[in-house]
Image (cartoon, rainbow, N blue to C red; front, side, top):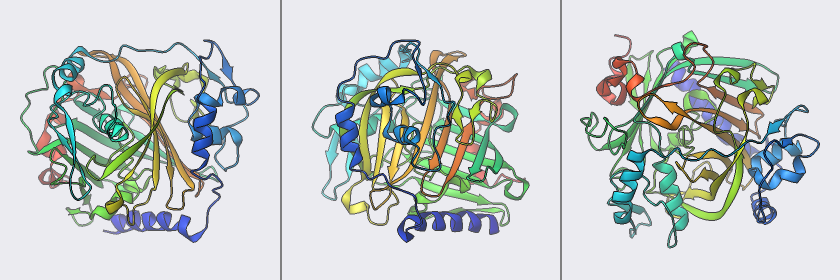
Length: 449
């Protein structure tokens, strides 16, 4: 119970800091208008270009606003002097045939209905990309729906054995590592061959997320379980459970816990997903801002992505050893709660930069209730050759930078030289196919037995 209390207390303190004025923030959301104007006339960046501290202003129209702030250096978290972003070719063609087939078969049937309570209801979705070419009306919400159902393989597993590790970094250079077991899986609507007719282990859900801490020892066995439901009007908030080792039982947390730090890290429970958004499409909507070409890392050299050797410290920014950055077509959308559900919520704006092939959010800038920049989160969604699937999404690394509190969390699923990548689909160890154990509240009671 003490571990859970520490996590929730830390969340309360972090959430209060902006309102108490203990911030460094100088960036207002109104600067997004200027960024949109500055980035309106894009061409291409020549392959082989190196972006450094000496020339970054020439290429800022291709960067998320949060990355521009890192180069400007107005916060504690800033680009180091030796930053070097080499631009390479854009890699497209990662949309699997099965994903494309589902999209072509069902997307024309998908509809949105706005209910009298202001909630959005998604109708006739059966898998694939719900809105492959989002248009008005509700274009911003349709982009959000694409992000919400962004493609990842049917089952994703990271363990300490294959380097599922998170590092918490503070302004004094202290680094606190935590090793995790992570089991993310589709419980319905998956499009991967061989996984489309697996019995639903948690009826009514479409996705489950199970994360257990292995280290440090005082937090061992603490486990978070997120359940995402197909009927989002009946379940406008994902169900959130936490197994507390001291009690040897799980607790179902309230809806306000969506703003709490995910196991004490710099992601909230609404941030902690590979696509950058962990809410629902019922009580959130989006304002479409622009289509832009944005720089991102999409094809990694896994040997170069080891923490901390592969990172420019203290920021934790990828070194050139990761590989070359590329310009990817992205939709920029401002995600926020609908007015009737916004009271007390931690973010007023979540500006997401979502690549338009698989619709993963590759970067997010979050603003507090006073419209001040609070966090930026980079999601480096890797594209590679997945056994049994082919060329598609095959892993993620992330860094969550809290500008107002000078704290950061770095997630890296890479590093062990013989098992660098996460387990995906058919190469997942058989024990993790146990949906009851790794995807239901009842399964939490099997921990420590």
